[in-house]
Length: 428
Image: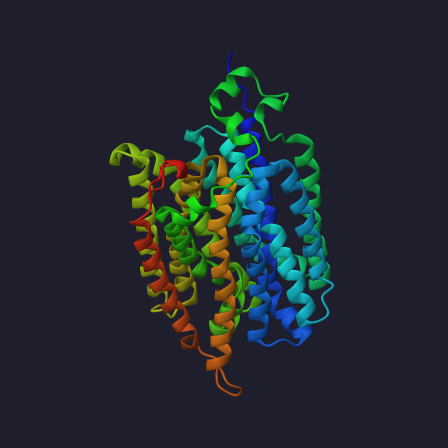
């Protein structure tokens, strides 16, 4: 009997949700200047609003991942997608800085469980050989959605106000939630389209699909690999949050570009980042055969990516031409995202039946970085730019120097990570 391919539809649903997730979160970067003018906010205040999403996202990562391990992705994803879609639409009804900050915090809290639960679904529905490739495809799709969202928003703004645009984007998730809940099953054996041959490929699915609310928290807290996974993800997320928050403002106000050109140039980091995710997902398994193990391959790719991102981010600051500079920053994002499938693949192999909780905790640390980066970027810009002082590219340079140093720290973290040994078998 030939195996059916029902499992591939899980990847399709994950890709569609990843796209919706990034459209919903990135659209605010293009609308930021309109919102700031409409609500009378300073850059520091707007930075705090942008950071509110990341804080909500970070604080609810572990609860979102743990609920997926306990209740299963079917029920959890349906509920959280409806939740964050509501608050995406509600962004268009904000009337003050406080209301906008609360709405964006609640939006982040909803999105928090997305990728941990998709990772849990991959762990159950995909054989080990297909998991990292699926992560690469999913993250490529997410990055590309974020890359083209600025152009989409510019086009939508021709017909709708910024308030109406958020209501439009909020409707996308509701459609996905209905179809996913109707089709998906937490255990592959419960799906009518899965035959015995495909089920045989999914060895261990019965174990990972069952509820696991008894997470070994002390084991997580004592694991060096877990701590280093947290640290490296914090480090690669700090620079990345610049791409989806302050990038359009940076290009318009500090690189002197018009809104349409700025939106077009904003594509480069996330577009190249998507390619990095895909390349890593394809190359890492093949490199494992050359280097003699999956662990060595993941470390090599991740360290190379982090060091490359550090050099390219610094190199971007030496280039005066905006287009060339953004192409170099795009390559920095490519290098950054070489680490993504390695990080999430490690969560699946190390976490096992607790993959949702471990990936949620890692993503929590990444979004703690996201809670700091937009705020400090806006704070520094307000601090160095005074009324009547000409706006200059040089005012932004300290931020990029900080990002380069943080990338080096990410590379050092990977030296101490065992990305393949299950948590229950680790001694430290």
